[in-house]
Image 1 (spheres, rainbow, N blue to C red):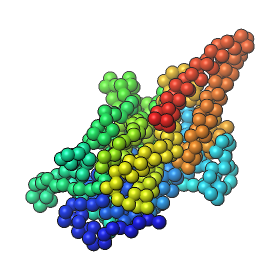
Image 2 (cartoon, rainbow, N blue to C red):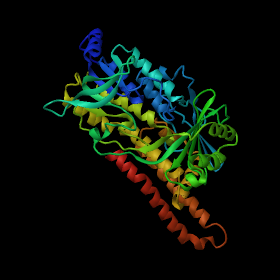
Image 3 (cartoon, one colour):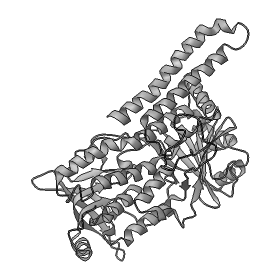
Length: 500
């Protein structure tokens, strides 16, 4: 049972609006910021939600919400935010490898929501969860509207400059901002105070260094985006992953009745995207678009020819880091990121918001002035969140390494992964990707099952033809190299995401 708010809603609102004081100050009204502000406000906490720009954002990521993220969104009381925004149901993935399709629907689940064939195989009939895909800006607008309507939240459009600390302590007491007068354009200093400050200012966070030290996101590629109008996807209501021998992964998924998002992964400094080859536009036009399904190519060419260089976003990996909260917490993409190939970012964010709000419930932490209780809750949060986040993070990074293969061993693993799907071993991997299987052991089992299938297929290819048995030593050497490569891809990720 949640504790009742200490002060009446009217008193809390007056304190927020006149004195800029609240139980918690949340910096950033994005995916995580809105979710945690709404969750804490539902517990009776007084919340100040600060956002630099309240206009509808125009971003090319955060457009696909997996079933596990949708379930968390509903538990947060924000399930209505996917309604009325022309959101498209998503039923799974269609992986197209060298123009051959492998359909991977979300897995069948039992009445308790558990995946029936988590360890192998796939269900033919039964209940299946769904995700949603949409325009990011429309979804964020809905989240913000929910916060604006909440009696315990005051939303302020202002630019946060720095955190405020006590004169005799390093405890964060709030933030200093600059608020623009809409009539005069003048920027004036503002100050907002809270017993707890939560910063969720996104992938390019200006507060990351202060909160978790000199940790930097690793960026090896960018996604370049096109918006395709009235195109026909090979499978309706499925996200598409296109992998070709000479191309890097491309994603296709519908974000509206008439709109489909195309995301082209372009690693740094590849020859195919050099100025001599026509740059990124040249790579997309000459290499990536020809690898798309024929039904999609005309719309992709029209979209490319209609604009300049497509907009881009860095594909970042930032493992989580333990924090020692002294009045401030850094969360959301500022705290933890993974490659967006699997569309798991919002699933992690909403599950994080749900878990943290449960651990900070007034029945556990009556007041945010209790720094020891906050520290204990954050420590539990850091380790317990890994049940969801580590699976999604490891899967995203490992699959990208396989799908963007650039050596013989990775090519073998790539082929083995696709053959694994072709053999119907889809419910476990897709359940992990969807955020509804939260057991790291299932991820390890499927990853190394793919590895052993890869070395077996490779051995069969080496030993095929006359005198094939004489090539067995070469097959054995290759098997060792493939297994070693798989271990080098998987184990460091598991160690960093799961045990540190």
